[in-house]
Image (cartoon, rainbow, N blue to C red; front, side):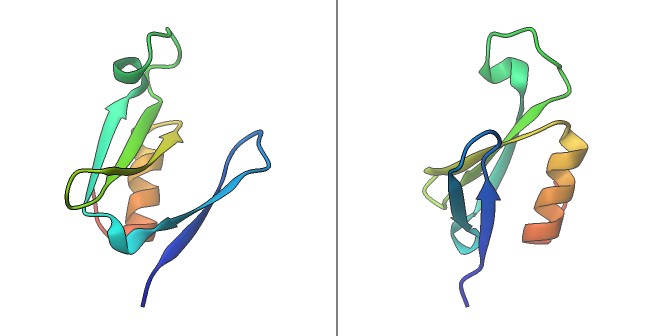
Length: 79
């Protein structure tokens, strides 16, 4: 059975459904690696990749522990 998760975008009426069955890899990157801003260094992005390394989705989290908790809750794995 296909597993989907609804993702509501902050400050936007848009909603996305992420098909968790397509996710093969999850990569975490600090915000400073992806953006040239001097924002909070604890913020991270989690990129969800298909088996062929195609990026399916990228989600923003306030900390790596938040990202780890989300991945554990929805994919059942520890990062």
